[in-house]
Image 1 (cartoon, rainbow, N blue to C red):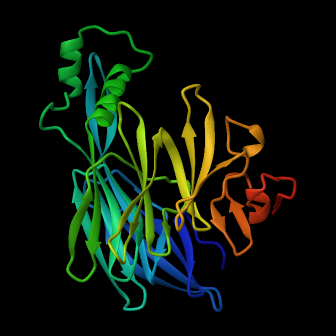
Image 2: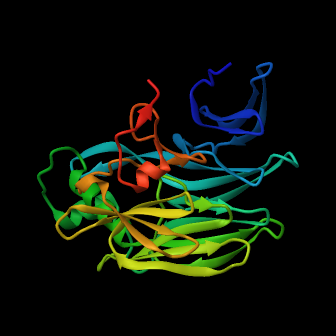
Length: 328
């Protein structure tokens, strides 16, 4: 009964196992009852006819809701100078919201969207980052237009220089909106249009509080923010530079900062008191000695190794990693 097939993401809620599975025509959320191995399709989302591929985010659980996103790709033939190749591009993102208690669901479709990042939710609202690309002021050149301007170029593979141009364009023209969606009214409030970093490495919501980082693309100036979904209160926890990744665990924002030397320093900030502490990390400055990805009452859990590893919170804060244990 543990076998879930070619599942994109799995999770557990109220004793049931949930898995998202994709085929050529649809993406569906399935529940499994481990008591008798009975299975049920909870939500089925049909993919557009011209879909060549799709990717599904992890499952996010919040107040009896499940959230996940489906990025839809289409494939086209592109001419790169004297050669051609097939190219896949994101054509939009579908956000699926499932109310497990009411047994209802809805889909929000965002066309011409590069990415949707779910940050967290409460009973009445949820926060997400909408990522798109501004092509109005300076349109993105097609491959044909790009090579017509560049003339003859030497490439290790077909489209190498255009790929680099397109990647740079996507970064410099990327626009983001931090949106707060009201569940009952099906409307949203714009919280910020600053360039927002949302970590894929760990939790971005703790209780009803979400954390996010804004960063200036040129200077690297970074601000760590908290937003309370219930009260609407915004608090800036820390102003610094080059925050790269963060996670919310044990009532703290745990983050790493890239220094001018290229090395890293590691910090945690108490979300209730604002107290800032540096993690000694046993002196290592090129990697995180232990990365808290989940927590229990007494332990941190890391998923960065081949198998889950555990460390007491008291040992983590004391910079003592001798008692790391794992499952083989």
